[in-house]
Figure 1: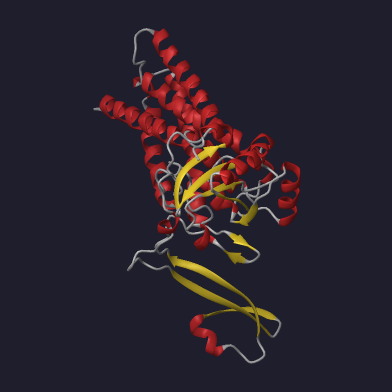
Figure 2: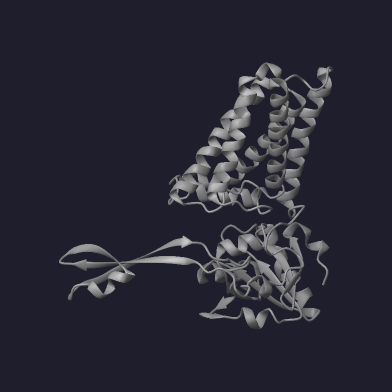
Length: 367
């Protein structure tokens, strides 16, 4: 019975680590955004680690996959189980912190393929910790899968090489499988719709007033009892129950304080250059945009650019790269979700995304 439980734990942990790691390895840039969120000031206040987020994300997801493979084939089982234990303790701490302090809404454990609430993520890690502890206690029962040690070594080495190749590929192109709300075939307007009868968020509002020089909090029920002469200071909103949030909920196309998305999403031929931060845009990619713009306009396309950068950065980019396109503002988080490359090219037809390409793949663009 002990051996059966140990082998089941080995299979369960190994397969889950491989699946979880491969999903994130498909989109390491997306996972790096999640790590950067953990490093940000509101969470762990470690902004000096934010520039390292992508490198750390790639290392962690490759480690996750390779450890899963090593466990299944029985390569250096004691060392493998130690690494698994340390890794799951680290992830369990992160998910507990996210859940308890309500700071990161989704740990990114399964990328965009499967969204888990913070408490669901923590529960998942507790289950994994339980099975890894079984493996840790019964390390001697985790034997190599193959009697020939060379086979085990080759499989382990091959998993490392393939993971590195996959990471390099998706960093220089698009994710192999797109799980995001803006994948090809998505109608943006329909993605923003809220179904009739969908649950609404329940929000508790707390009002802060200065009374006799002291800040005091009042609920909505207490508003009638606010003393005369009290001065409003602030309002805090606490979400009691999260309502339905459409897959696309923060998409805008703002220029000069007006949102033009309804008008632009009706265009039969719309080419969009997406660059969430012009100061971080890759120069090689930016140099290609004006040529693409001219080619697209010659075929009847309306060409625009979308960014979260300010007017100064926009003017600088237009001058530097000779861009003759209008820029529209959209939140950086939304643009990072639209595409991972900076810049990237998106083709939209009557509000439906029909093509997305990395700046390295502009030759594949079909106009």
